[in-house]
Image: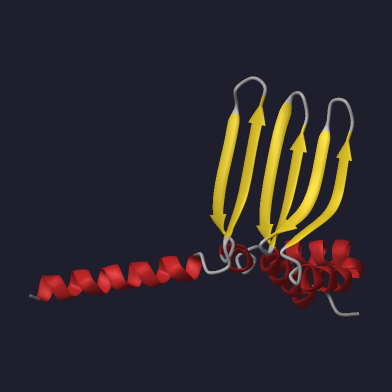
Length: 142
């Protein structure tokens, strides 16, 4: 009976941790090269802001200085884009290449199709907002 209670507690904790990890969605990077090399990565989006807490502070301060002037703009854009489930932002096409940036169900989607490689990236807009907040918090004060 004690073993059953321990197993139930472990399974409940595991289920709760899984639900929390995936509550913001999934970041996806899918990359294919003509030579057959294929990279396919799925990462729970909630991990990204948490991972920023283990990055050395001087690296975050450097990143915050680099993107600092654009952080308010980034937060405002992601806030507004969350209001649109489908929004075409950029589409560029020529004879050999196709680049498309759009939003889909609260995610920023980026697709690049070239003769030698294909790259697809999906990132929840909420994650971009969280990263912008973290970088603003780590920006050095003047």
